[in-house]
Length: 258
Image (cartoon, rainbow, N blue to C red; front, side, top):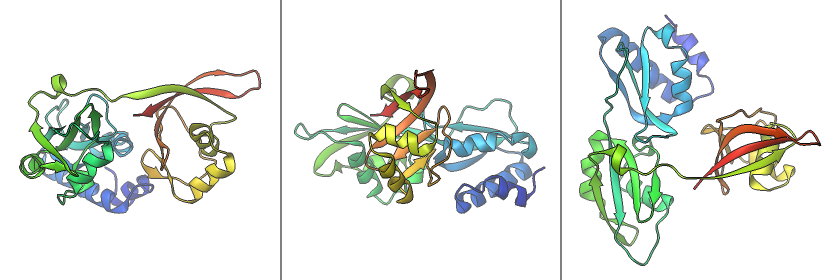
């Protein structure tokens, strides 16, 4: 059994308020022997960290993000060997305007303008004139009944019955970059096609997230599957090392989120 102090030390790199709520959920699951949901979406890095100590918690840790691939997920805690149900609905928002193409930020901003916190929404996929958003089940009807437009564009909201059938996959632009090392400053420089000094400015300015946590350590080593977000440049997923060049530089595969 892990102590409260040990629990908080283990998650020292995460938001303290979130970890406090998570610890309360762990205690509740242990006491009640029932399925306890972390009823908002958090980053997979937190789930993976929690999953790694589930034996010390005497609990099973599961997550679901609504899509086949996801970065934000809802966590559940229980004693079952397998568990699949999560209180998540996926809503589909149709842009009914023929004159304006809407982007991710347009849909997200309009949903949040209803007074809905970001943590109640999962990842968001935009495809053609539609946006697909996993939401905490309790608010899906509210969104359906109250979201009538995205900006000045009229919209229509549907709660999907079959997410495996009706939801598109996340799309990436795949490419490769060449770096002198796997240090974060070098990775940012190559990802964004900027100088190393500009990459350092981005880090110092708090504009870089690694696995959705703000990072300013230039010498942090990046590993496969890390997700790097650089404000103004986009979000990237680090792939595998392809090879070494003749000048002993590293060629990496990269996925840039569309």
